[in-house]
Image (cartoon, rainbow, N blue to C red; front, side):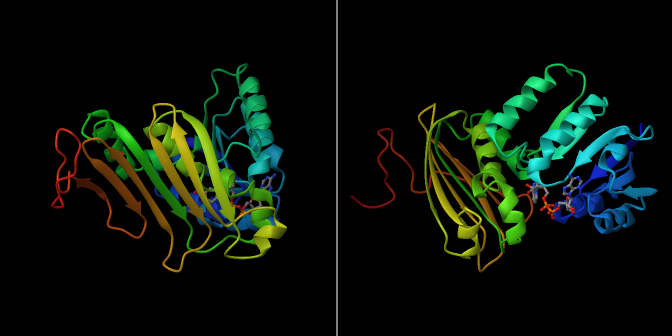
Amino acid sequence: MQTFRVAFLGAGRIGQMHLNNLNTIPGVTVQVVADTNADMAARGAAIVNAPRHTSDIMAAIAADDVDAVMICTPTGTHPALIKAAVRAGKPVWCEKPVALSLADVDDLTTFMVDYPDVPVMIGYMRRFDARYQLAKQRLDAGELGEIERWNSKSIDGSPPSLAFIKTSGGICIDMIIHDFDLATYFVGDVDEVMAYGAVLVDPGFIEAGDVDTITVMLRFANGALGVIEGGRRTAWGSDIRTEIMGSKERAFVAFPNSPPQRCQRSGLAGGVTRRGLHRGLPH
Ligand SMILES: NC(=O)c1ccc[n+]([C@@H]2O[C@H](COP(=O)([O-])OP(=O)(O)OC[C@H]3O[C@@H](n4cnc5c(N)ncnc54)[C@H](O)[C@@H]3O)[C@@H](O)[C@H]2O)c1
C-alpha cells in the first residue's frame, strides 16, 4: 500500500479532531505538525506521534519527506497556504471554506489553472457522509420525484470563541456554507437568496459584525424553494438536519444526536390524489 506522508498545518479545534481521525486511517503518516503557536504544534504532534513539529509553516510544506499537505488553519490563511503547497507540487486537503471572499476564491481558481496536475480538495464533508449519500442515491434513482422544497438546519450546541468568530467570515461563510454546499449538490443552482439575521445568543456577535441566528430563503433555478436555518447555540446540543422534499417522497437526514444511518423513508402520509389534493383529512 502507498503511504502518504503528510505535513499537517493548524492543530486547533478541528485540527486535533482530524489528527485523531488520521490515527485510524491506514497508509497515512504525519511527518510534521506545523502551527504558528508552537505549543499547539507540539500538542498536535503528540496525537499522531509525528517525528517533528514546528512553527515554520513554509519549511513544513517544503520538506522533502512530505508528499501531501493538510490545512486546518483559520480560513483567511487558506489561499496562501494552498498556493504554497501547490507551488511545491504537493496535493492539498484543506478545511472549508476556501477563503473569506469571492475575490480570493476567484484568484485561487485562476492560480490553479497553471497547476492542473496538483489535486486540491476542500473539506465539505457532509455530501460524503453515508446518510447524505443514501439520500442522493434515492434522489438520483427518481424515488423522491421532482424536488419541490429544501429545508436544512445547522445549529451548533454552543458558540466558538469570540476570537474565532471575528476571523471566521461570519455565520454564512463559516457555518451554513455546509448547507449551501448540500443545497447545490442536491437541488442545483440558486437564483435568489434572502436572509434575516439576529443576535439572540451573545452580544459579542455584534462586536464581531456577525449574527448568531439566521434564516435564509432560497429560490432555486429549477423552481424549487428552500429554507436554511443556522445558529450558534441550542439548549439541546448540536442540531443538524436536512429534508429534501419531492413530489413523491421525502428524504430526511439528521445527526449527530440521532441514530446512525438515519435516512428515513417517508411516504405520502395521507396520500395525494392525482389532482394533488390531500385526502388525509376529511373534506
Ligand atoms: N468542517 C467543519 O465542520 C469545521 C469545523 C470547525 C472548523 N472548521 C474550519 O477549520 C479551520 C480552523 O478552525 P478551528 O476551529 O480549528 O480554528 P482554531 O482557531 O481552533 O485553530 C486554528 C489553529 O491554526 C493555527 N494557525 C493560525 N494561523 C496559522 C498559520 N498561518 N499557519 C499554521 N497554523 C496557524 C492556530 O494557532 C490554531 O492552533 C477554519 O477554516 C474553520 O472554518 C471546519
